[in-house]
Image (tube, rainbow over all chains, first blue to last red; front, top):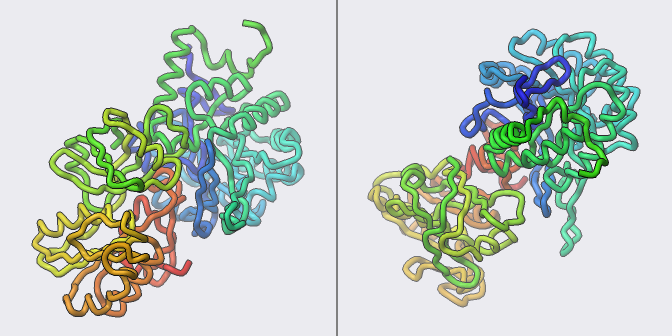
Amino acid sequence: MNNIETKLGKLQFQNPITVASGTFGYEYSDYVDFNKLGAIVTKTITKHPKIGNKPPRLFETSGGLLNSIGLQNPGLENFIKDELPKYRGFSTNLIISFSGSSISEFKEILLRLEDEEGIDGYEINVSCPNVENEGLAFGVDAKIVNKLTGELSKLTTRELTIKLSPNVTDIKEIAKAAEDGGADSLSLINTLLGMAIDWKTGKIYFKRGLAGYSGPVIKPVALNLVYQVAKTVNIPIMAMGGISNWMDALEFIYAGASVVAIGTQNFVNPKITIETINNLQNFLEEKKLTIKNLIGKANMEEK
Amino acid sequence: MQKILPINYIEKINKDYFIIYIKNKELALKSKPGQFFELLPMGNYKGLLRKPISIYNIENDTIGFMIKKIGYGTKYLSQLKVGDFIDFLGPLGNSFNIPMNQKVMLISGGIGYAPLFYLSKELKNKHNSVIWIHGGRSEKDIFDSNIMNYTNDGSYGKKGFVTSNLEKILEVEKIEKVFTCGPQIMMKEISKITQKKEINTEVSLESYMACGIGVCKGCSVLIKKNNENVYKTVCKDGPIFNSKEVVWDE
């Protein structure tokens, strides 16, 4: 058996490294051979085009990045016409991230995408902090997540993964609700809520006040949430949150992730995904380990 | 392109400004005036994101980056030594549209001087006559005594702003095209004046930036396209825009 292969629900992955939605796009094909990734996860698309939030949209902290992009995207039909054809040609898994403002809109988007070939799965974004009435309201309510997942899982045989927000009282409850609703897998975490204020003037930096926080600083938070959720559910996890190198990736696999996604670090090093895959492969070969035997094997043993 | 290259030479201008030079034929050949690179210092750098720095000069294989010490990233860059390595991503973005045989004016403010330097050379190569107005807060923001300089405090050149006498200069010199880079407020005022005079004006915009290649949409600015306002990325759609397209009052 190939030691770096893994699975996410219905999908076979040639390696566990993929990309976090929102941080990756076709532009990276100048730097990365997409065929070598475990999967491609697109930026979140919505039914109608979204112009995005008013600038400023970025703020850098020590080891972290606040963003307020607002799911800027060309909308479902433009995505299908202009972008989907570019992604279809790759031999790896293609996971489309989308969000809606009601259960019926989520269903409508999914059904439209069912007509399109070359898609292997959906990541349901119920957790973006940067838009009003979209996603996040769903993601914080276990009952709605359960209902949404139930409705969507009936409509597709493709991989259905629910992206969870860390900005909830108990993520385990939401995770269980998605599993009970028929999700094939979970992906976590979306960005943490954060904000920035100028100490000199008291001015709130982002127009919406809040923003999504990502980058290496959130890794310990993400690691804990992945660990907690992995102990709670039986469906596999795609983990993201500050993963910046192959060692971070291994930590998340130990915590219970079957697949790990690199996000903010793509902005720093466009080749980080490929470097991570190669380094992970070398490590596993050297230590004669396989990914599948490491998933969820975090332990307290003295070594 | 992504290349890790050593610093070949460092020129210290004064306590706020310095120039880093690298040597790479391939990058030098690809680079056009107005484009930029995203720099990530190797070693002990504790910043997260790369720093977008415009191309100051190209001479044969040598590329120069003129940098102002502002935050952690640029201060870190200022402490590097010859031989230290930087990870370069670029050249990125679009470039200035260079006319031929025209009377053009360059208007810069502060570090906005940097991208216009390389542009000025290419303009002269294309037989344009070039007038350059530069402004800064004080004497230390002045880089060339042979151009028209303004300082806010009057410590060098004329006291005032680059816009102080602009309308008249444009008229007298019969300027056909304007290129500008500097603070947003300065470029906004210049655009108002040149639009009134119907002079084609290209602006080089600045923004917080993450990916540098058009993916994250973090550096978006509002741009008028076909009577509709849309967000365009400074990193990929820009950094050069026609001043008429820019929605200044966002």
